[in-house]
Image (cartoon, rainbow, N blue to C red):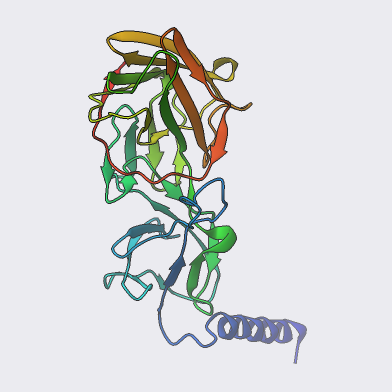
Length: 298
């Protein structure tokens, strides 16, 4: 037998072996399965000391290597249903996935973010977008595991303000509005790359229509804001009380507002101005709904 024929047989055998290896235990397309949770880092996503989690009916969007997005819904038995439209593995080669969660509705492959509006639905702020790292799975191991180090994480920032009555102020009945000034308020989230586009135009986030506050303390519904650097690590704050505007600065840690973190401040209103507490990085706070109005001032 000549050397050319031996080489040909060897190559054919190697090809058959590779084919058998790739198709081992695969008698047809295999449907992907999902496990998912929210990252439990205490300074990022736990709520009042309890771990945040998805609830029945929540939908996650899985971006697959075929460039399609597959929607999985959490069932009452803690499993995720694909609605009869799963991703199918075609062979045993490992492939990568990423997933995102938001209550905002995409337009095509993007979500246009405008943080001058803050809407809460079923406990979720519309701009509270969560994303997973890239996860690898295959037909031989078809569970796409978005838990542990690969769980969903917040990619936005949160600012929670607690107002208190100080010297010369008996209660907060006359508190009517407050504004965070000079922030990047608009951006685009790409649902295919699972990333923000990082816009730079700035504006103000103004909360008006505060009503029903009668005591000496008021915890405002937390704001979801874009992660960003801020000038001199400060955010200008204006508070309207008894038709008078009080001004002060919220000091942020170095780096400004970072993704996944909740920044808490106590704002004490006094008859001669505002007193701002040091920044506290706290548990991610639940969105309880807005009685106030959020207005754009661009």
